[in-house]
Structures are given as C-alpha cells and as structure tokens.
Picture 1 (cartoon, rainbow over the protein chains, first blue to last red):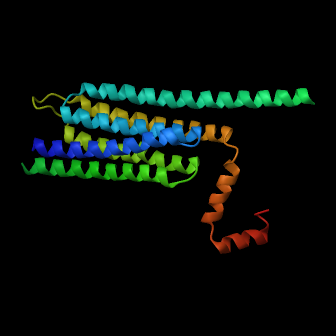
Picture 2 (picture 1 turned 135 degrees about the vertical axis):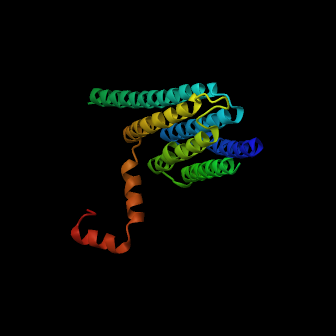
Picture 3 (picture 1 turned 45 degrees about the vertical axis):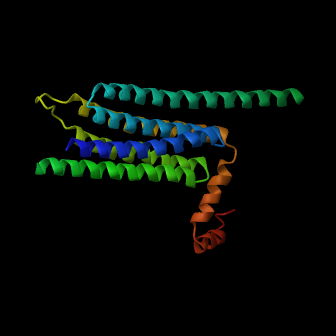
Length: 104
Length: 133
C-alpha cells in the first residue's frame, strides 16, 4: 500500500515542479514589475504545495513547521515589495511635480 | 484492506483535481495579456488548488499515527490553508493597488477587454444611449 502512495506523491511533486519552473521563468521575463510580483507569489504557493507533499512522503511532521514559516515569509515579501514600489513611484511623481514648478 | 483502498482513491482524486487546477492557473497566467487578468488566474492556485492538494494530503497522512497518538502534522496543514486563504486577498489587493499607482495604461487595457467581451448589439445600444461617449 505504501508504494502506491509513494508513486502518487512523486508524480504530483514532479508535475508541480514543472509548474514551478514555468512560474519562475515568467517572474524573470515578466514585462512589468506587477507581473513579476504576481509570478513570485504564485511560485511561493507552488513551493508550499511541494513542501507539504514532502512532509507526507517522508513522514516527518517537522517539515510542516518549515512550511508555515515559508507561508508567513512569502506574505511579508509581497507586502514589502508592493509598498516599496508604491513609495518609489510616489517619490518619482513628487520630483517631477517639483521640476515643473521650478520651470514655471 | 478495502478501507485503505477507499482512502487512497479519495486522496488521489483530491490531489489530481488540485493539480489540474494548478496547471490551469499557470496556463492562464501565460494566456492572458494584462496584469489584472493574470492576477485573476494566479489567485486560482492560491485558494482552490492549494485547498484540494492539502486536503488530499491530509487524507493520505491520516489523523492518527501508527502507535495511536494524535498526528499534529495534519492540523498544521489545515492552519496553512487558513492562513493562505486569509493572506491571499490582502496580497491581491496590494498588487492591484501597485498596478493602479504605477501603470499608466490601465484605463486603455480595461476598455479593450470590455469592448471584446460585449456583443455587437450591446455596443449599439450603448452608442444610442451615449454611454460610450
């Protein structure tokens, strides 16, 4: 019985790894910043699935703790990246407005 | 033995449905042209795909260990589902805010999609009513 579970989990992990490669490729070539952030978010979700599959495959429940921390860190990464790019954009607009005022 | 097989089939079905939804999400991310559409396809993986895969894994893992003690790993997987369901809408909201602040073509992109989705008769009615102006 164990061997069927092993085959199922291995095949699922391989398919998810292919999806992960596709997501990481899109995060490299994505034309805009938002594309990249969405792709990174997607990739981290797929990594969470793969870690949970490894938990069941090796029968080690400590890998679940790793997964919980990974979920928290990926959420913080998205929040920090979006806030960073919003602030950069606001500063750029502010400087352009100042330049226009000086020219006038 | 029969119960073991039923458990295996249930977990296999749930994991296969989750994998199908994940593949659909990745393909949708490649298919759509604009970021706001791509976000819609990517959110599918965060909620439904993860839910099916992890519930299938919980069924495969079992709530009891072999020596009869309670298996805490399955509850941790449920916690992962709950946290991702809470955090995914927040991150989607932040990303759409980023798109609204940085992307200058948002109006054009959304208009293009609306025109493609509407049928011709709908467009004519709108022209008569002056909505497209």
